[in-house]
Length: 257
Image (cartoon, rainbow, N blue to C red; front, side, top):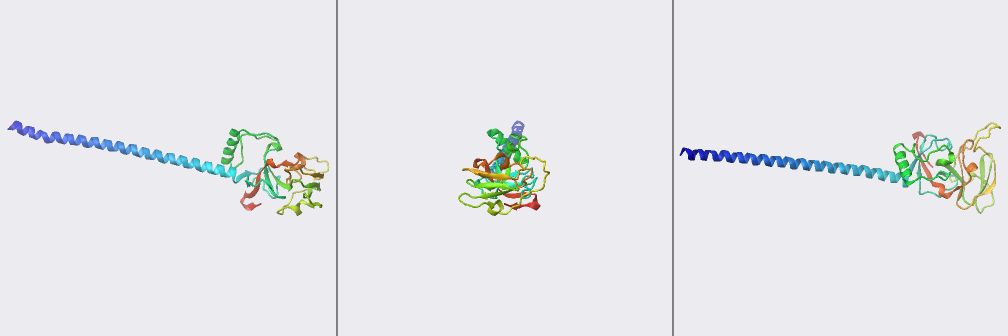
């Protein structure tokens, strides 16, 4: 009887131990499963965040490169209409400008960057507000992209007197001033210089000439100190990267062109 009682007494204890072992094993499995699911969810969230950031960057880069991109102006060539140290936006779809409109021109020295260099320049300009580019920069004016005003179109005849361009549109008989033919009014910057000063790009007189097909005559608004078609000649339509539409900075000089 005593042996039977002891055996019966041990059965619940053994069963309880088994149940405790099964419970703790199940708890460990549940914790492991929960930990794995949590890590999986965190990794999914991280991957989605990375994809979102990359997608936004690509979208903005494509938008700024293909639809409306910004340009930092580091010279006073287009004062007083375009501020030195300002930021303007250019539309690359508008490559057939009217007289008086402002365009953004590709470098005129013939040098071309590789796909990698162009992509690197795009990325660096994006994060530096268009101020810096690691490739293709040199000290030559024709080695830089330029902002200039179109004053004569393909087929026009022109001459310059006292820094003002006179234009005879193709098919017409009379010369008119650039201001009379401009699509919008604008001002130019002219000031007196010493008679002995032989500055580059400051010639105020040009003989009569005629533009060929696909050629534009461009000038800077600062007619004394800047290089333009008076020095490097008419520009081809292929050099026109787009039309300047908007000056966004400085804020007190924000304007549409």
